[in-house]
Length: 182
Image (cartoon, rainbow, N blue to C red; front, side, top):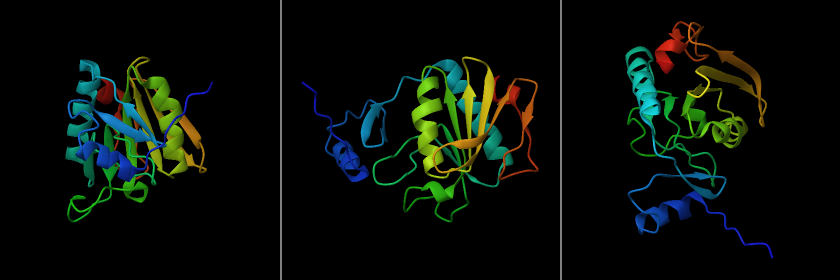
């Protein structure tokens, strides 16, 4: 016997949060209609997010979104660690950002590495996010994905601690992998 599974819309997901069906003391993401409980954040992950946030806020002329949702269609609302968003007068106070607003998504990955490299990366490619970085804490490297063809990224770069990267949206700004991973 096969168990039934249910897919939820973004609207359903928000209603579940508002009515208390989803416990407020836990963090969730909606990915392809599935409600995914997020892993607890370890100290290395937290430190990398803080380093990235400080660097991004000080260097990029963008709205820096930290562990906030982005609306990707009707059935996905992930919460990447960092999103560099196009400037917007209300700082997205009147709506959630959508794929067209994102210039760069950064996922800091430790226990969620395989999930981020597969399910989430594919979701970002399908939504034409121009550039995704995975700060791979396990292997101490930065994985850079560019040029979505609508299902995958055509360009992949793997960078180690002494190397640097320049985001596509900000070619004049360089960051070292060591500054991201510590």
